[in-house]
Image (tube, rainbow over all chains, first blue to last red; front, side):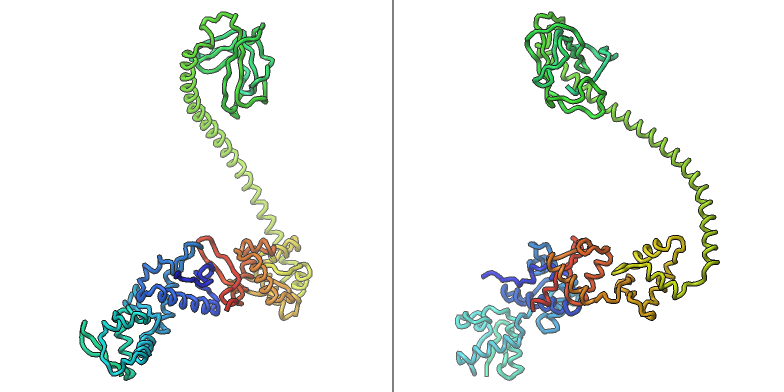
Length: 174
Length: 315
């Protein structure tokens, strides 16, 4: 299924940072949800700023408008404040896009665990990510670092315990 | 036929005869012309037709022609019925020393000569023209310098004159007074004008007794304390504007927004044409409407355009 762009995407002023503060807030909010929707749709977890600049996300060739790089950073900073973006370097060239925050992934995971009755059982990380049982779940195929962080959140809440190192990592749900 | 020019019919020094044919009548396109029964001479440079009498129905040659050059010397026919070709009819009865125009070989040879000749004319012609142009420029320049020295003499007189006028005015009146403000107010008829316009209009109305920009600005600042129906206002960009007190800002913003909505999007130039204001003022209005959150902007390589603020409207 193709990605459905919001109406703003074909509205030229969307690509110019608006000087009016109220307008700018609305504009940035629209950009934030567009970035998250786009990454969710394409299941992207990282953005390379230089690449993103040229990608359709920030560059609408149909109306020949491109979001300037400084505005891209403003948008991503806005997302960082909400906990959806984490910079991977000081120069702000790469970032993680957490279109679902780790604790949200954790909740999703825990709901599933309860549904299928896996509490008090030990699972390997591999099973959770690639196992046949999780094929229909949204967290199937999730990147390992993100899965670990989701489990970490559950551990902090006392709902799980992560153990082991490297490929043999496992988790016990309570 | 308009390609022909009058000539004495003599050959030039480096010009040689290629073929000639007697008893030739010229046709302008398909129409007979008055130039019949002449001698048609093809030279290395041109085609010459010389007057000579007697003519019957006979074979023809057709010449396909390019457009006449603008600098051509006037000829027998100013306008030609037929733009593209010329017919010449000749009588075979006349014996020809060079065996006539029927000989293709000679014609081809001549065509080559013509082409070479034309090229030479081209370059020589251009050089000659450049030379003429240079001479003319020289002449203009020396004339201009003469004018300039005369002008400087005149200017000296003008400066003296203006000095004397200025001192007279100073004697006649002191600083600007409230009275002056009122006079100025009466003489102007403003709805919404930027300070430059006001300055020009006021001074035009006053004729000789001109105001300085500072005086005018100070006068405008007295509008409010004097409770006059006009006000001076400063836009964010620093532009001063004199406008009627009744000129409602909200109204201005609404009408600007409406007009932008009708046009889909506008630049300051386009908007100035629609509302009949200067570009400067038109832009101020758009910025005002933007500041009020009614418009938004698209700043691209194509320039600054204003759009209805759909960001706010659609939420």
